[in-house]
Amino acid sequence: MHINPEPPAGASSEAINILIVDDVAENLIAMEALLRRPQLNILCAASGAQALELLLKHDVALALLDVHMPEMDGFALAEFMRGSMRTRQVPIIFLTASPNDPLRAFKGYETGAVDFLHKPIEPLVILGKVNVFVELYEQRQLLTRRNAELERALDLNETMTAVLTHDLRTPLSVVLLCADKLRVELPDEPAIQRTLGFLDNSGQRMARMVEQLLDFSRIRTGGLRMDFSAKDLGKVAQASVEELRQAHGLRSIELQEEGDLLCDVDADRFAQILSNLIGNAIEHGGQEPIDISLDGRDPAHVRITISNAGMIPDQLLPRLFEPFKGRFHTSKGLGLGLYIADQFVRAHGGLLSARNHDGQVLMEALISRRNR
Image (tube, rainbow, N blue to C red; front, top):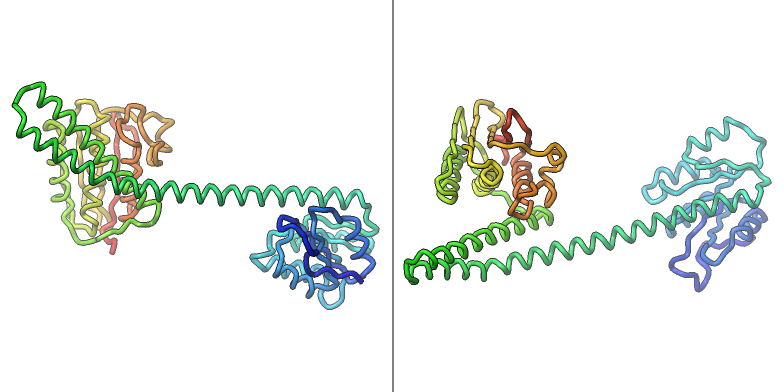
């Protein structure tokens, strides 16, 4: 009896393994001779126990199992295979010399078989079926390799983004400091001050982009750290609103507070949530007032609602909080502000949503009171 528990010497590492299990030596020899080809490695086992040993060592594209075997029949072997994470996805074709019995065939399919063939088996039939599963296995392997390559490329890209954005902060800080110094030292002439204003505004915009990229990198790589403590969200919101009013020419931003606003939050991240959402409202709300409401009447969470004039296109709403995708066509940023706000809200055990209502865009964030 020819038993081949190991791959032949010199077999390519890319060879595809096919497992044949039969307690009759002549059947193993005949099946191996029928299926042998350069790119296939035929693993032969004379028992269920020997088959399990081979399956522990090799990944197989297809298993051809004889139903009638002593000690462990094909059905029992299939049950073992389906119970293991390593082999549960291996396609199984049962081979039997018994008369056609619908009940036995049903039992075979119930154990996870993809086919049930009766001996004597037509060579062209078994060759055709084996070819199909070999091709499927090759396609799965190709997809697995490509996915791994994509993941490595994405990891490298995210690492480079994190390094570059971190290193950009120092020269950018120097540019902003120099702009402030020049504003004081150069003559107070409109043309000069206007140019310095352009420089300062561009530097500030770049600084915000760098911070967004850093936050994006932290979120994607799991490096985001939260520091929760009890805070009055009203006071945090007042500071954020006042800062944005000053930055945008005393823009009309109305803040309303109601109920208990004491909540466990990361104050810096919560301030950034407000800054990103209000900044989005300022950018897309025209010159109409922006209304902000903090509602703390619910004992489980605080509701933050920000409304501005305008409308979000229907096709954009489902993807509004996706990175680089949930952005308006007129956006001047990277398309990360709403994504970062959404991720920070989630980190607070909450939910961020957006909708159109009576000519207004409403952004609503729920912040859980207990996050520690």
